[in-house]
Amino acid sequence: MSSDLCPPYAPFFGFAGVASAVIFSTVGAAFGTSKAGIGIAGLGSFKPELIMKSLVPVVMSGIIAVYGLVVSVLIAGSLHPSKDYPLAAGFIHLGAGISCGATGIAAGYAIGIVGDACVRAYVHQQRVFVSMVLILIFAEVLGLYGLIVALLMNTRVTGLAACI
Image 1 (cartoon, rainbow, N blue to C red):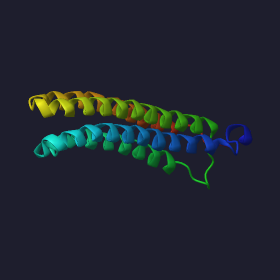
Image 2 (image 1 turned 180 degrees about the vertical axis):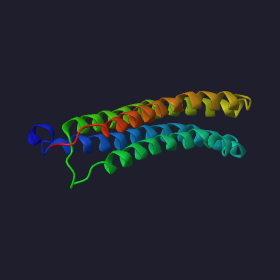
Image 3 (image 1 turned 90 degrees about the vertical axis):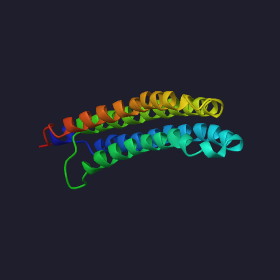
Image 4 (image 1 turned 45 degrees about the horizontal axis):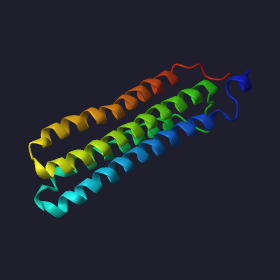
């Protein structure tokens, strides 16, 4: 019965969840940073005094990577070599990692596109800054939803029965 509930390959799925959370959310953050950074570089050549306020999309992209890091640390914290690890826990951790990672990619993409467009518009009209921040907040919330879902899934693992 123990081998049915806790096969030796079960931790693979948990570690796949760790990797999914970190890799995918970091890819999203990197895309958002690079795309918004291109707009900032273009802005800096025309109005260098506006660069500091234009860094908002880059900072928000970095937060997406932090979401993936938080989820991966929480998942990895429940993987102990000395304890039994049920297969169901592995699948839940994989789902949590994919949830956080996939929304991290979506949020990073949205932040990058919006950040680039709004920073370029900010050169011509400074009143667009408030609109830019509001749109970026809505894009950031995509990643936050994935973080919340991953945290909820991770709390369900504690209720699983241990392997006999």
